[in-house]
Image (cartoon, rainbow, N blue to C red; front, side, top):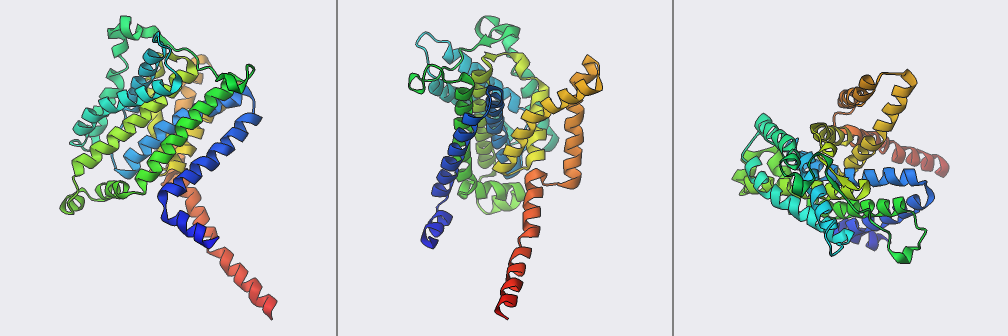
Length: 351
């Protein structure tokens, strides 16, 4: 048993594979036992997780701030919609791969430019991207559908699952599969030499440069990977909601994504999971709160933004490292107590 444990500790690949397999089995069991509405929420959480996981690598591991993830989601969503609508009847997998490739191709030059910017200049450049890129749909209505966007064919479950297999469960499986692929790739990157170089650049760019690291290339790589994750999330969003339109990618989305990853915990994939759960559940909670308070339509629409701000401020005051950082601190505070109690118990029993 100890030999197997040592192998898993030594091999990041095996460890990440085990995490993905166990998580996949758990998700299948959960989706099989919940309602169609809950399966839709799980699907939403899946595509949010893909985007937040890429953002947590970008901001948490490499130290770059991006307010333009919504733009890369739009690229992924529109690419998925165009491929999914072709006469050759593209399946879901090739369409999602196309969404990732398109986002990466756009992310490469943007990442190169972003690697030369710092602080508010980087935030401003990515903010302009979030505002300008989705607006291209209005400039090319014949190709991108204008304000109405593009309608996406809903992914159909394969015949071997049965004619009565719930579509919502199939969509949840697709979104969760995409999220697990992101976990596998990013977990291995974070725990590799690439991840260590990202953290070195984040902590001290000058020292990293003196150590021989190409700072610009490392930052551009992190930005490109983050763009690919956002593109995958956008493709999954289009698959689940069956539409790709400019209204689905407002500036508020990019700001909400950044708030979600900060609240969940920067630099941690588990923190991205916390953030995704928050982004899925908080709108429903705020809607119920608005209904209970009998707020007007305008106040009801602005309530989620206000609550996001309050949650962000509260999390930063209580847990500056996010929810995952707070959980890790609590576990670290409790863990030293357990061996001490066990030791005292054994000593008393021996007497």
